[in-house]
Image 1 (tube, rainbow over the protein chains, first blue to last red):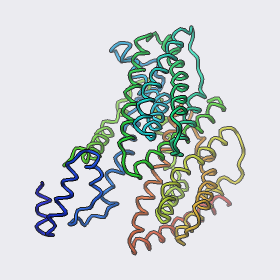
Image 2 (tube, rainbow over the protein chains, first blue to last red; image 1 turned 30 degrees about the horizontal axis):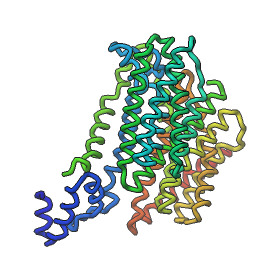
Image 3 (cartoon, one colour; image 1 turned 45 degrees about the vertical axis):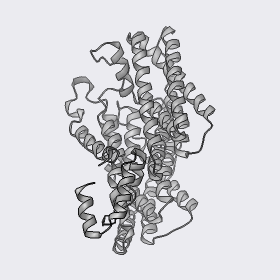
Image 4 (cartoon, one colour; image 1 turned 90 degrees about the horizontal axis):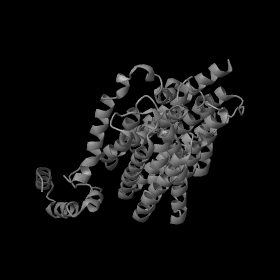
Length: 251
Length: 202
């Protein structure tokens, strides 16, 4: 298949095993990923060392994304210059109180499997839209600082625990937090004059983020990758605890 | 090479580019101080040597203990630490915080030095007990005008990455010389903890 394989096989005389390994590699993405666990007979690289890029890449990506968060977190003042729809899209990515909730729900759905992922994808988005419409009908902006903390504690806690949760519970959580965050978004859209298009932008962004996160978590095959998701869940719980503290302190 | 096996490498490179193009260098005008919440939270754990040594020791000990402790300790520690932070934010007093932090370095270093392998529940209890002190002391120091959420996020992430760093170093446990080096590192953490303790009580 490759020059590396050929040279290794010549040296080690392991044509049969290499051929089997390469066949598995090319059969499909899932098998390709799992077949990479089979060390090459000629390989002298320890298994854990070979895993380092995989271990590092996810935290590095998360870190770089968070470092890239622009200065202001008050998303409702955002003006992309591209119109209210894109202002709404950008809202989610610069409002960590909403984004972390969506990420946590995506992780929870992904840990349950494809069915959970598909269900949460639609239930959360629909609930977000319904809540947003109700918020748009409201005359003034409502602040509920505890909402972020509560959603982090509940959803992040379930991710960290990694227990099988009934699908009805997950749908209920997605719908409840979708309604709550969507409603708060909607009231903010009124004051920032983003209106319906802004709500459509936020909802579209929620849909895409949940789809990507849930699909990514479903795709993860290894136990250590699942533990990485649990660690991320524990971080979200930790942030939630501190957020509850900040809220009750009045900061 | 299959595309799926290239994804981590692509992600690593994208991450590198993102960090290099970090927008804080171009922060404009009146918004310059706001996102500093994340940065101050992220920098805070590494600003205190007592916190850094204790976090590293947790990672080293986790690596010595092996699975499942190596995974469960980093999951449990941030949550209990944040609980301590929440208690601090709510004004619940905790006596002897500095002493508790110093003792955490002494004890965790000694556990690494002795390559102790207690039951999992006991390891979680020890780490959780000391996490309360670290959270109470460090999780509440939000600079004025900064975002509490981003500060908390940065603080928790930095702590988790310190654990990960400790675990990465602890992987040398696989080799005989590495085991010796690890125990030596534990001794150094313990000695540093004694110095912190001396400073705290004097």
